[in-house]
Image (cartoon, rainbow, N blue to C red):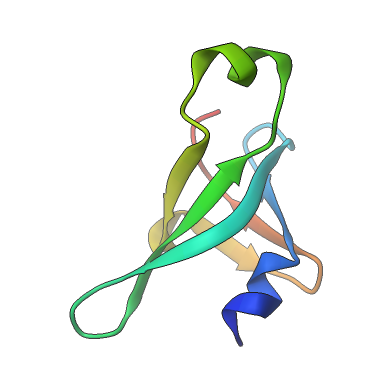
Length: 76
């Protein structure tokens, strides 16, 4: 699977069912292993004023990669 394939999937938090955002990058360790996804948070009224538009979702937080979505478990 390519990064471009992942970027077209919605990131959904299984704890609250909300869309987290879109993948904009990945983090890779010194051995070339992907360790996390860098996600641009979905814009909302609250995030417009609080900043912090990117979050890192570690590989252990990914529960399932489906055809159209990636299910993750992260604190809202």
